[in-house]
Image (cartoon, rainbow, N blue to C red; front, top):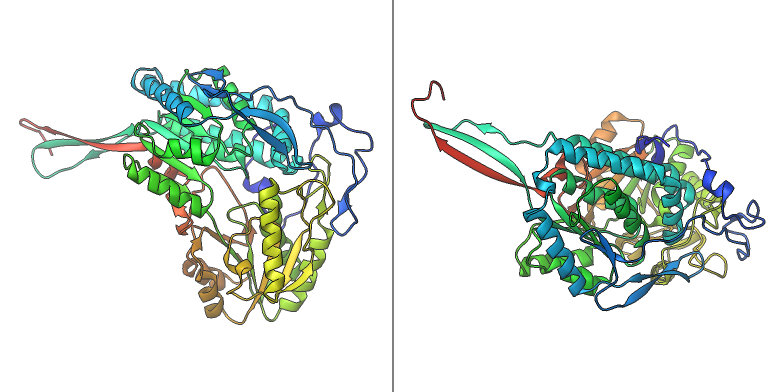
Amino acid sequence: MAARRFSSLLSRSLAASSSSGSYSLLSSLGRSSGCGRSIHRFSTAAAAEELIIPPVQINYTQNLINGQFVDAVSGKTFPTYDPRTGEVIAHVAEGDAEDINRAVAAARKAFDEGPWPRMTAYERSRILLRFADLVEKHSDELAALETWNNGKPYEQAAKSELPLLIRLFHYYAGWADKIHGLTVPADGDYHVQTLHEPIGVAGQIIPWNFPLVMFAWKVGPALACGNTIVLKTAEQTPLTALFVAKLFHEAGLPPGVLNIVSGYGPTAGAALASHMDVDKLAFTGSTDTGKIVLELAARSNLKPVTLELGGKSPFIVCEDADVDKAVELAHFALFFNQGQCCCAGSRTYVHERVHDEFLEKAKARAVRRVVGDPFKKGVEQGPQIDSEQFEKVLRYIRSGIESNATLECGGDRFGSKGYFIQPTVFSNVQDDMLIAQDEIFGPVQSIFKFKDLDEVIRRANATRYGLAAGVFTKNLDTANTLTRALRAGTIWINCFDVFDAAIPFGGYKMSGIGREKGIYSLNNYLQVKAVITPLKKAAWL
């Protein structure tokens, strides 16, 4: 399938509507009997449905170091699970500090002695393009594997995330031969130029909520700039990164340029963050873990760090809103990807004039949300990633109830198997409640009432986070006022979750440091060197 703009696939705008996707692979492989039945609204009794057998085989479970798949040095493995059932689907090599050491040594040798930083930028771009073509060829398998290991709807993985992965690598392939320095005028008889050089060995740690997309956000710009990489996958979702790394080598990537280590944060992750021979670190995950990563990087060799961290994004519905459209967009902003999205619109502020109508319709929309096996067509919401996240979300729901927020719908697990949670809506939420302050990372919508713009600006900004915000209004002046007043890295006006390869993404405050995607992401992986040469009898300066 062609790689289309992610903004047209993953976002919702004023004219948004749902669409059905192609299930070509599912149609021919792995369906269980009765797969066309047993799709449940969340209010249905326990989800006693037969699950579809994922139509993909798991072939890569070892670490990838210096172009070879190898067992962990310790010989240990760890289980990775199907969140639909909580059952083990594979055992993966458990990397630790020694595996990180070997991966970093391979990356260092590939950078210092190998062909990757020395080949022309055009040659590097061709390898990135060949990789994108291979991903497109294997996109059905990759989407199935992503759904199996993560729990996200297959349609989302196949129709939104795989096309974005392909588009991102096309984008960075285009940048590879357009990275250059400047000639700088200086006072005196000197020729001054700047060189933009690859930074060296990049350590990268990606999260579990968007494994393939985050792989692209990290790996694409680092390779385009000529760096080598050691990437640690999230322990919950190691499988697709290993698959696509194999495709990279089929595309002609030299050994040692991209190394993948699976393992746990306190062992493999900490070893990578604190490694003295890693020149740059990039991390996506929680703010609390980001603080640890930053400290480890500083205490080792003071390597520069890019952080994309948590959020508690406001979604502001103004008094002039078309309520039906606002409800649908606010629903998408929160519940997309089971609520497991760092920029989720998890604080829904609604003007008092439309609040009551909005609340009733938002509740009805949540009740209509289809929860079930993410491989089944029409399912909007799959399970949470694992038991830890499942229990965390339920604790926050209990906290909301105990804090006297009004539980409008949901509030419990869905079914009796796996990590499914009912779409949940709270009203009468106060700003000092935990559900209003903490990043829940689950399908829990909190609805607040406000009177005027000054009030909602103050309340929306009263958070330690600043990743994103959404504004729903017909008034251009209102949109402009909020755009400039809200302290967040991305503001979506009458849309949400519009992600394009060229649009930078990152946060204010404790939502991170630096920007991913677009031209800004290249700066993360480049050093700037000034070169000054005296001029003799210069004809001009």
